[in-house]
Image 1 (spheres, one colour):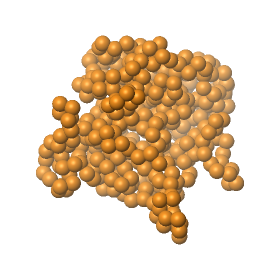
Image 2: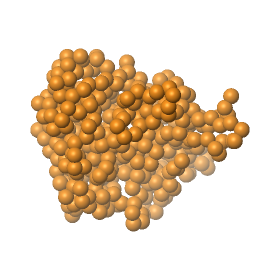
Image 3: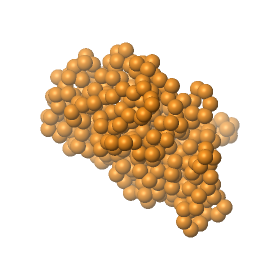
Image 4: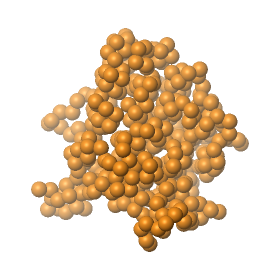
Length: 400
């Protein structure tokens, strides 16, 4: 099992990760400890523990998604030695969560671009500094671009850039899909359709798009916008996976989608259950007589056994889904699960982790497979005690 490198851990800690009593920051390219209030855990807090990391979790503890995106990008691409720089980076808009989430597909092959965030005008300092640190080399599949801007996000000075634009979130998502298709050389056979009105139900799509290369397109509760229809036509009757219950994407909308491809729905009664259902889904369904795993010709995470990565974020911070997507498209390739209350691990998440908890027999724990999780956001998103609870649920236990 791949475990986070120390450089990646420090990178995500360094970018303003809220660590309780202290923060790790980079000053003159050196990691230093800075006081952030009264000491809580001593001396471990001086190193950022237990919030930076536990046995089975690592936190990217930004106060907002802009900081989280910067931390994730440098965790995935440390950019400290040759071969660890990205080809390109995507700068997605903070004022259109739909465009930011749809941008996650650019993390998939062949571009593999991590996502940074910015409002219109000028880049936030943390985003500008991260672009400089990542020093993207240029993506041949994107005409040599080092930076891909989406919507009204500004470019980074001094680097080769290309822009993906549109008149509304539906058009921008369709343009991102077209850009990814051109880079890959062919349209995907699968498309994810989510609600443009309900970000909490759309969030889990970001991680899967980053892993699979399947684009994210948008509908409303009453219509399939023209930009989405045109994008679906370009895929040539794809498999269309609708993420969310009928209360969010009604039957009348899926009936229209039927005209453009085969439609299947993945859903849960609420955003938390919806994310869990998506993490466990596979098409075609898993057979009880064979190993269930994703692969060529299948759709879905199929995480119903031990030995996986997870990413946890809060439903009230939809941009964190875009920020965290590169963690689902690299390393341990884990699905996104969600929190609503920072101080309590949701029951569906607890049950899912218990179902997938790893066990060992007489061969001992070194022969077992392991689960691991990334925690996205500071303690206002997911508290320290909640992180500790997740850590305990990820532990390998003796088989009974």
